[in-house]
Amino acid sequence: MTLTPFPTILVKRLAHAKDLPLPAYATAGAAGMDLLAAVTESLTLLPQQRILIPTGLQIALPAGYELQIRPRSGLALKHGIILPNSPGTIDEDYRGEIKVIILNTDKEAFVIERGMRIAQAVLAPVVRGVWQESDILEDTERSSGGFGSTGTSILR
Ligand SMILES: O=c1ccn([C@H]2C[C@H](O)[C@@H](COP(=O)(O)OP(=O)(O)OP(=O)(O)O)O2)c(=O)[nH]1
Ligand SMILES: [Mg+2]
Image (cartoon, rainbow, N blue to C red; front, top):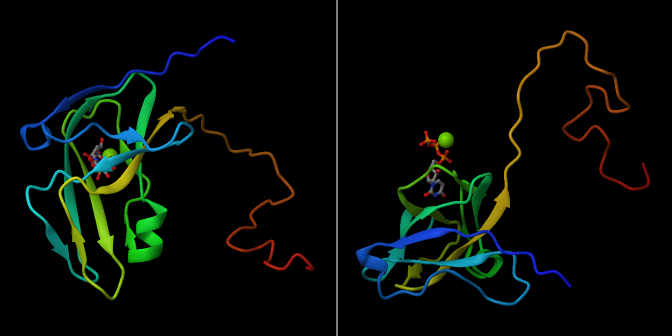
């Protein structure tokens, strides 16, 4: 068996995250690394409030990759915590602090504590395209149909 080397992500921990562990995969097969809230003190997110949560991390991604910031399903199901820009995009060339935008869609307030695993980050390869203008586009079975044109019932 040949072992594939994992791509390396350079990471710099800012002062407010020095005592926090780096984001980690919760299980051997997890796709996402859980991101920790590097808030200095607990904060309360009211219903319908959205906030930018610092992670205390600056990174340099390997060439040809992005980091996707995605919600955690447990927080979404139990507390209505979503990421309004999901999946958030961390560009390969971004060197600022990674931050997570979270929105409380619940009727209850939600308390974010230091070190809470608030979101997850998935490393993903990027395929970039180039435009080629054309007056003729090959027709297809779908053609211009969209936005529910194929219906919802399997019985048709
Ligand atoms: O959840 C997110 C999304 C983005 N970013 C950072 C990294 C990313 O590379 C940069 C820009 O993100 P995006 O392209 O989604 O935002 P924009 O509104 O298009 O801003 P810009 O004009 O800076 O590209 O902001 C985060 O820290 N967290
Ligand atoms: Mg952008």
